[in-house]
Image (cartoon, rainbow, N blue to C red; front, top):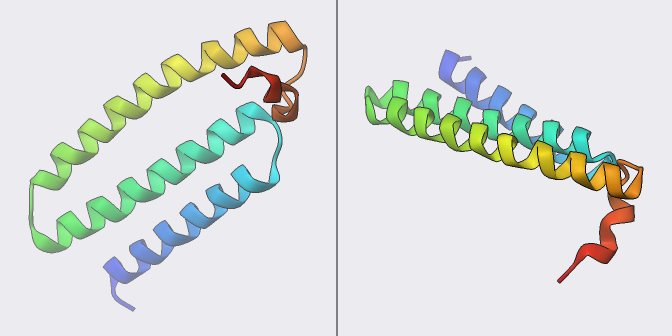
Length: 100
């Protein structure tokens, strides 16, 4: 098995594990962590394909993705904390009344 095939397979496994965590778990923080796992799986596959092609554009995309992911977490964590203070639970089922 080639190294790039192994990394792509690992990326698929990590993405599926993160997707399973988002679907199965009802805790808002665990769901955020699983979504980050999915983002990192996509980054791993992007790096693998960029290394295979010998392109430096992949590194720029990865940097951009990490900046956006950090900004997303910096916004998502305070929102989750405010919701926890309001509803006193991390269960996402308690937040169904927030729809606009």
